[in-house]
Length: 309
Ligand SMILES: Nc1nc2c(ncn2[C@@H]2O[C@H](COP(=O)(O)OP(=O)(O)OP(=O)(O)O)[C@@H](O)[C@H]2O)c(=O)[nH]1
Image 1 (cartoon, rainbow, N blue to C red):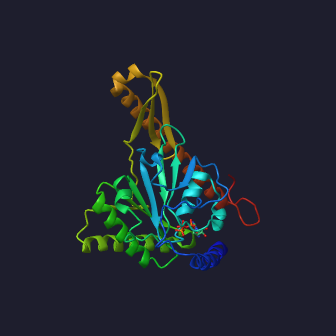
Image 2 (cartoon, rainbow, N blue to C red; image 1 turned 60 degrees about the vertical axis):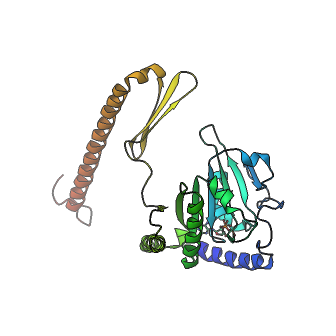
Image 3 (cartoon, helix red, strand yellow; image 1 turned 120 degrees about the horizontal axis):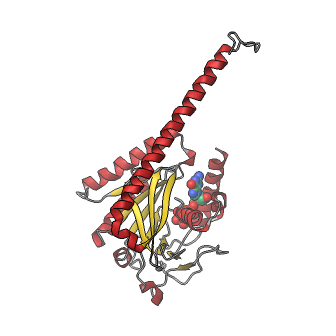
């Protein structure tokens, strides 16, 4: 509660400060201003986008973070990729230029994330959205669930339809953010309402083929999903989910994969055994709980036993 109040006061103050600044309309989105964050954390690279930079032509999967002002885009990025504590995000300044960051923690994780200013204007001639969307793999649209989200939905529709026209292969993700201020019932209701309205808008525009994924709408993997990664030393890494809390990671010689069916069969037996152990453990725990309840019911309030146990 108090956090919510604190945030809204901060937001109000920030809005006032922002309003004093020039908007970015008429200004270049890719200017040579400083990066939006002072005191850069452990970022690999973070910079204001500059299309004259030859590095910008490097082909890397690109993820765009879009949404209204103060919806929480930069906070998500800072908390996820820079281990910033959520409280510290209160002090983030509003983003007024497109900020591009390389995320390359390892050879498996290597992509760019572009954080957009909230008030981007698709009709501004300095904003070359066609060029941006053409090379984009995924667009994450952030909605502040504590705010009146009608404006955000209108902006979502404009963003998604503009992007889809340029590049129908973009994956659209909608993050319903700041749900910490909502009750459980309100969370579900908000998600349902946003989902319904966003899809209704697309249907009205005869664009129901655009698929919006809203957080909570499903996971991109199931129990058959697995990862087989060939390492460079003739070894293969085999990763597969056993239960929600357990994954099996094996390093196997490459030639062993000629008999992959055998590996799958062994994995199947292993998973079955784990599940059986789990089910037996649950039964034992339940029966212990049951016995302890029976014992308690045989003890009178003054602590003496009604029936010897
Ligand atoms: N309650 C709550 N507040 C949050 C959350 N995430 C971010 N905020 C607050 O929301 C405000 C705006 O966050 P930013 O990350 O700067 O938002 P933005 O979308 O990048 O804003 P612009 O750069 O203006 O487009 C900050 O005061 C954050 O502390 C959250 O999960 N819950």
